[in-house]
Amino acid sequence: MLQSRSSKLLCFLLSIVFLIFGVICNILYGYHTYSLATLIEALFHFNGSKAHITIMTINIPRALIAVSVGGSLAVAGAIMQAFTRNPLASPSIFGINAGAVLFITIALSFIDSALPLLTLVWVGFFGAALTALLVYIVGLLGRGETNLRIVLAGAAIAAFCSSLTSIISLIKNENMDTVLFWLVGSIAGRDMEHLLSVLPYMMIAIIAAFLISGSVNVLSMGEDVAKGLGQRTALIKGLIAVIVVLLAGASVSIAGPIGFVGLVVPHISRFIAGLDYRWVIPYCAILGGNLLIYADLVSRLLLSSANLPIGVATAIMGVPFFVYLARKRIS
Image (tube, rainbow, N blue to C red; front, side, top):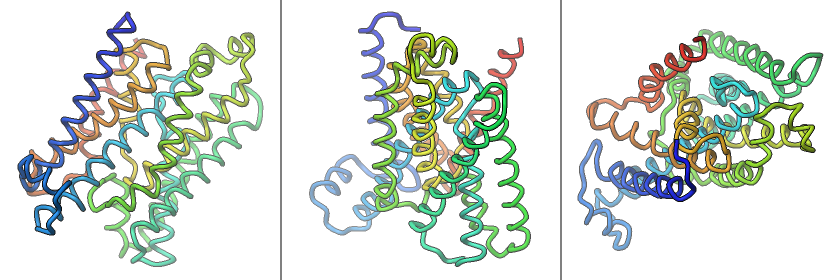
């Protein structure tokens, strides 16, 4: 763990440089290889050639979506772990992934199997928000610790949504391919219009997460401690819930349920910057983008003939880390 402010800042700047390098490599390498000169020409002297069209309409949007989704999921995971005081918590604890996929499945199966992708983005966003709201309301009911009730409510409602998705998919199996495409998580086939439709929500939520990072520090020490220090815990919890819904809901709606980013990156950020969320949240935003951009790059370089969904790539990398955390937690 870095101790001094200057060392944390230097490492943060290096992470940004590493991210920019990854974005450039992601644009230039993959299914087709382009030179840096071609990228510069496409940006400043677009001529309509096949290379320029591919770079501007496919590669650049894909790279920017990877960065945005990765950063959003990581920040959402960080504040979820602080909110629940559970190191294994992730955005899916609100049932956001399962809710988004369920609503997309319903839309494809009962409304129109050929709905445009932009419409599905909004359907998924609405499903994620509605499910998270239901989890939060159920979690506030009854007695006992609120955090535990929310975790249990999220697990129950996520299981219920997943079961409904499976039932609908079996009944309407002609739409199974499209549903599976969303289930595994992918950033392929998206364009800038899809990103711009949810990017404002991501940016607002990340800024809000940074602004309440001091309160998150206090809340992570326990609700009783936070109340004793004069924190308005109900307000902070409500803000955290809204931030998580905006970040994870926007991410899932555009890329599907990409796992382990919200689990792994907060731990890496705390390992580097410590427990101060004024540092953890900015680190998560950058390192989350790094993780997803390099996962996408590696998957395309290793399997250039196949379109490996990025959700599969992150799962392959995240499972060993999850097992390590679980064993460490048990011991």
